[in-house]
Length: 138
Length: 86
Image (cartoon, rainbow over all chains, first blue to last red; front, side, top):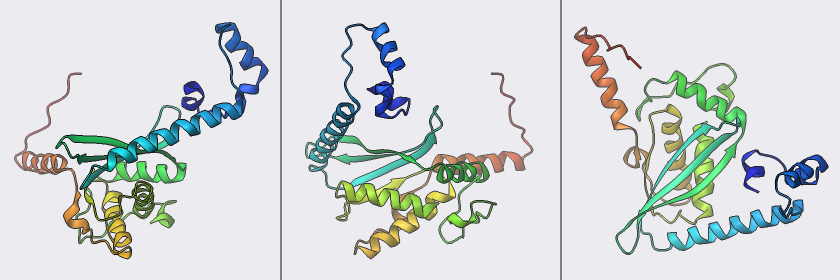
């Protein structure tokens, strides 16, 4: 299942006969689930993870966020959001809140800005990002 | 761009119910989009009745600022960068 997620393949690729035979050739005892079962398992795992995060966040008072975006090796544009907080036991906690794919145009602009910006503006000065193709996004 | 980042962050905050005024700070790198994101998030949260001043709570990368200042200082002295050997 992790292979499907990391390769960004649709779940129904498991229905492909050649792929199915390849898996079977590698591991004869491997039990292959249907696309809907894989999808449901993934959704269930996600719901459990979100539930666990919400339980952790119940003990917080103030939180700080850190986030960044980058391009993964399979050319997907990803943003990640992490929160830091002190829990009731005065321990520093770090929880990943999001790890989302963003659209490519969004990210190509993001990369262009990083390349073009030696130093970001300070508050009170206007950002000047008028390069071609991205002006409509600002 | 910054607006879209702010929307993304607001969605995450909403998803985990972190919009009750508990957001303390957001440290980021010095990309200009992060400044516009912070300003956009400030106005979005203000619309929800939450005061979150961006100039106080957005924490840009201090190390980068120091590096730029040192670079300018060294450049004014005419000191050249050491060539990396790796």
